[in-house]
Image (tube, rainbow, N blue to C red; front, side, top):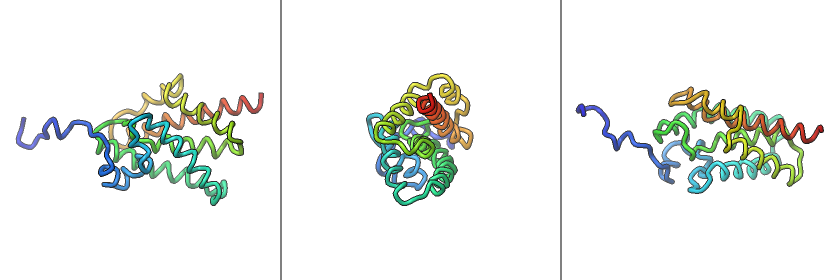
Length: 176
């Protein structure tokens, strides 16, 4: 080992903690304001947080403002996911859930109004596409790998494809 080379311990992946969450604004955003700290199914917890927060946000924001929030959250999320993945030393950590949040907001924004059962169906479909990664979602998941801006976009991209697949199924269900 050279005198300036980092040790293996310094390069090992990190597990996020509350201290990590609060150490940088990007961590707070990428970890879904703490939802990503869940030890069990952080992606599902993040999607549930997205669902509940969307229902609250739609009480105060118009559809146009919700769309603007989703667009801004995508750009900010790209930065937050890039920074947080680098700091965790993992290209696409499961604890980063901002991708689920923004993608599920997009599903709800485009599919609403729906009652509880429609929303639950959208939730289940989105979780299926995001977790199982069939077809185009699996392709999207492998497209942008690594660290840096490309990898940060990749964290978001497969969830946007999962959102598209969810919306396609909902459209086929509604208009069949």
